[in-house]
Length: 283
Image (cartoon, rainbow, N blue to C red; front, side, top):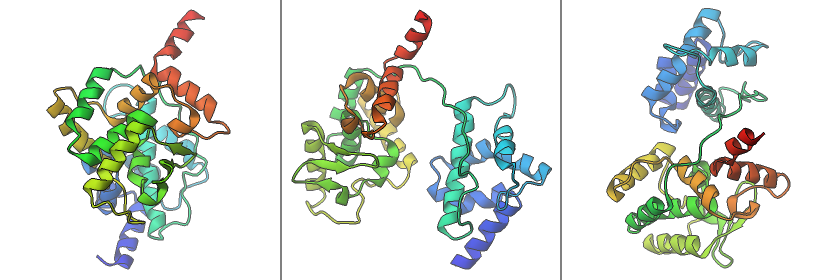
């Protein structure tokens, strides 16, 4: 399929809310498998067809309509806030791809006020399990580096996928992150240097540090590693919260901005340590 044909099919699928035709066009860039995306988005697209709402040229009240359309479930009570946020994130991902190929100039979701995320309990993974996972992955330098960066510096999955060698200063051991510069710990620097040596010791400017193109690729590798380590599967988000729970982070070490990051870091640490509920119960 050439670019013009791809663009036309994309625009038509958005205009007519044809989810079954849209997903094959975007599946390679979605953070979840296409069948999961279909389940999460199908009720929204069905409602759009009923209400004659175009995702290509949405009405002025689109945000209010979308927040309502994202609430129903196939059976039972309305969707939880985190499910709604995931649905909106998937749609935002689709709009991002639409802009990349020239179907839209800007996302109709700009300025959308998403529901607040649900409070998460302290992650169940123990420090012993994390150590076992790190030991198991030492020969897989890519996955080991990813896990160490999460544990030592609270890296998010998106940061790992977007991490290129140009963002790393070998002389200072510092990494340029979206909101700050993080000077790597000795453990993280050692893991990254080992991964660098294992792949020829050459800094290619536009080459990603890690081989995972999509989040699900990293999750699949992590799932296998957990099984090999003899522990149950923990997603990357749980590993990041374990880092915030266990490590004495600063805004720089955890990737938060210096201006407003301290409050956000304090809040994230409190949630990761299960302190938010305790404070609420003491009031």
